[in-house]
Image (cartoon, rainbow, N blue to C red; front, side, top):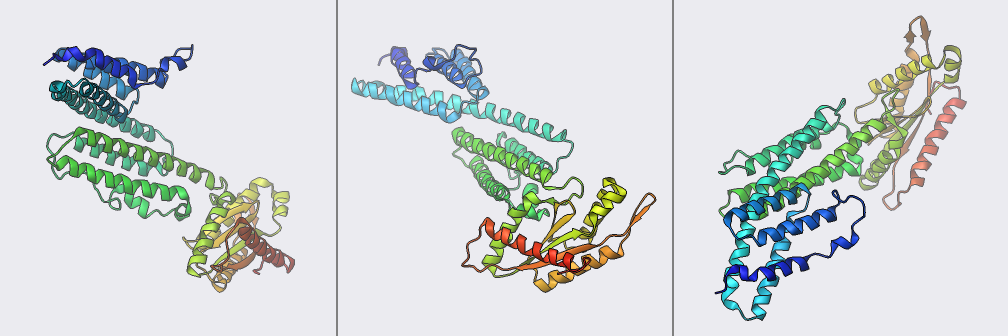
Length: 426
């Protein structure tokens, strides 16, 4: 049997043939941060390991390769495929030369390298994953207004608990909650009170990612407790979990932006930019269920005179006062929008025309009975309201023009209320 170092020239040739010649596409500038440069360095470290001749040298070069790979975000799959491809190529060369007596030895040589690399990679990767999530927690901690990020914070703590479980040497039943509906993040996801977000595609994406993440976590726990424990499988599962977790964080951050921009800064009601999305969602529900919903458009009477007489500052006080009346009078399931200026739109899900008219009349009466007092100024004002019922035939396609048509209809009703003397419902 030939000594293993006899095959070092073949191993070197296989490593060099594995990657494209990246040197030809390098920039003349400093390339320390380029991924292609990292791949080139990785290739050198990989070759150093395969050409090591002592246990001490193998240990040192394994650490150098694995640490560099993780530090520069080179995936384990790339590292593993490199090892497998080179082993296969070398074994193929031996078969062509009919040197069959050394195939088992060469195969054992690469299997031992795979075991060392994989074991160390898992340990290092889990430590880095812990640091990443600790950093994410610290970033959330200093946010002035966490909003939805406080729920993502609980999710990150769940991830950290999972990592700690995998890092154990003995696996018990003290693992994180595996049911996606029962973890803290899942409970919020399934009971979110901000119902208008339920109509957004981002919320659906988060739900799907969260379910997949828990499914992977259940597999991680089961795999850890099984007798056939292979670090490579855990690396793959934990990398995918981290990927899903990061996607969830991105979606939550996006919802945070929606929450921030969806509220009118003066009245804290929803803005018109969300109306089309929520209207479309309710049109879909109406089409599927055959149940109607309603729209109420409100416009404060003679509001220009308030601004002209008392100034825009007092006008803002009146707008905030009316917004408060709407929130007090309407139901939690209703959507209230500041549509522009002194104009407001209310969307009432699964509400008949009769019910909507009663609510509109209550708004009208309550407004007329109220008085706004600010410093030494006392103001009474009224509101005109238009009401329409919305019911979609399930054979009719829904487009933007459908929304525009109903806006025009309720606007016509509002105009009629103004024309017939104001302070009334039509």
